[in-house]
Image 1 (tube, helix red, strand yellow):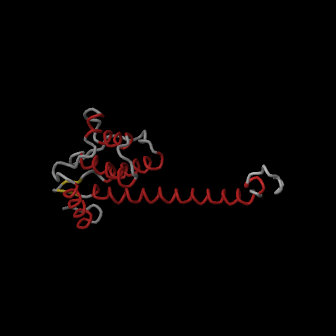
Image 2 (cartoon, helix red, strand yellow):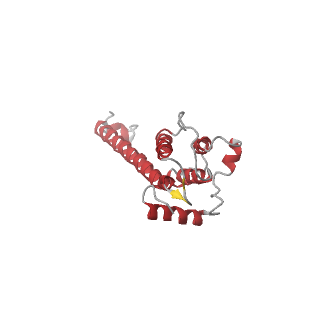
Image 3 (tube, helix red, strand yellow):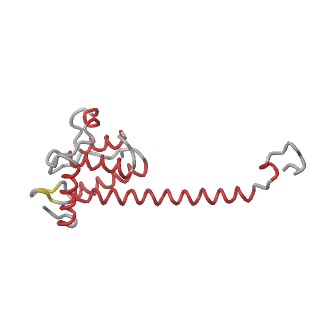
Length: 171
């Protein structure tokens, strides 16, 4: 620490920063805790958005209960680690893979705040059976399922499924 009378001393050179450094470490710890909460919140929001895939639509389930649970675990790993889980695999879908693809797109865009992240596209591609070229899936990642044509139609169907069907319900 420099003497206050030293004309070449910079302001921070004559201050005892040890207390500030302790406070900064505490602040970093608090920020770390906030990030953990944010990840848990993101996982909860992703689960809420995927909930309708555990329902029946037009007399058929989107997927089995076991496949639904597997998909939830893969999405959680993707949110926590930022990478498509190695154990991810094809799921048997009762409806177009576009429902899963578009829902994953909305999660990565609105919950994770990404534009198009290849790991999210890769998970949609794997779940859908790796059919077609990866680049094609990436190009169509933000396209709503044909049956609903747009985001408004998608939101209406999803809302009805979740309201009317609880978990595992039907419309």
